[in-house]
Image (cartoon, rainbow, N blue to C red; front, side, top):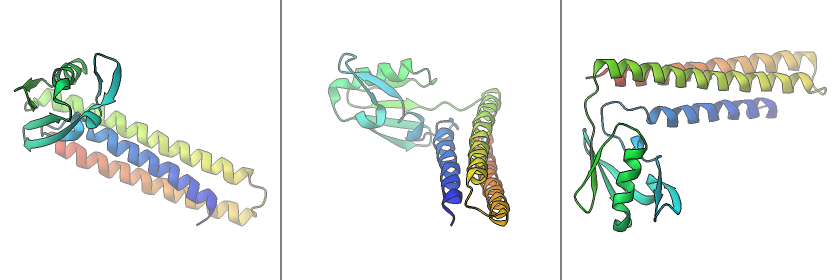
Length: 183
């Protein structure tokens, strides 16, 4: 594969990867650790900020409940406070050793809001892919070592890559939307 094409493909792959991580944070009414793992929590008296995944193990004990077990039990209250302050709409309860978060069922209105949010995230990913295409096309045009035929071939290959990545984004969006609309 041509180095210019490979570089463009890698940029587009990064956009897809970012989108997958971003979509994992959109709540679906089912308990998944990704809902809270990325939250940044101030611990040890506010002197340290760390992601929840660095502070505790998070598991879905059932479809509606997350269980968070801190590595250091002394920071349990700080983790609870951090989750509340993160404004996720999730309320943890503590039994002194672990935090439990009951994931409430989503109302139809909330589902529609989440679908709109998801569509914004999808559009941002499409923009990132199109930007990678634009950068790739500019690199091809700047390269004076390429013949006219090579330039045309690379332009077609970059467009094909763009179409494939946009189709992947659309597929991820359809899957997430059906997940969101499930009762």
